[in-house]
Length: 281
Image 1 (cartoon, rainbow, N blue to C red):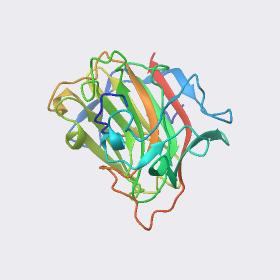
Image 2: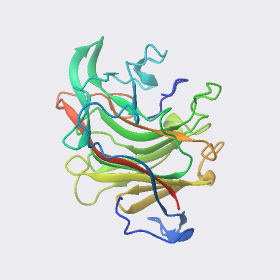
Image 3: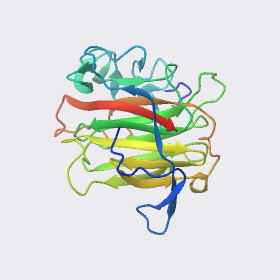
């Protein structure tokens, strides 16, 4: 999400491979290392109605002003809450809803939940099955930040892995990125994936990464569409030996998505069927 602040802000295994195999990616000129992660170590299937499980998720609240970063560092317009109107588990899934309303000085509300301090892991497969909202100015995301609980290391030095980001007016395109020192914000290392059939806002898709020493593989469903390695970044590789936590949110407006317009319909909801994390056997 390009959060420039000091406050931190199984799937289809048709592709199962033997450990340490090399496969050809969507770029036929590149070989990519794939390591299979099949040991399920953490999951939330959102099977209990009500608030998200307090043993799994916590919240970021506000518009960033209290943290000294109005607009969460990205010119975002929403105020994050923990109200059931914005975040709730029901019908077997998590629902994060962006609403157009006047609330605490903001014109929109939404929610951001994270596993910080509750679950963090170095390396593994991190995936979620999600149906996205739709509309200009919406910015749904499933992403990760490096552990910054000590307070001495801040963004982008802690590292950021964006598993899925979407511009709400582009319902067939998703983006996967990394941010670190020397390649953050608008200079993040990014690659996009476009559906050739279907849309992300009308059906569920699995967004995932497989992260190991010196590489991060990006998947949509069972399609490996990118691998990022230390050779791809312009600064220090900060994705080894540091635990990361997961984040789910829907932002409104901001530098990535632009602001809503007269054609943007509210409310808009991101539906999350499950989140799962695997380690290597």
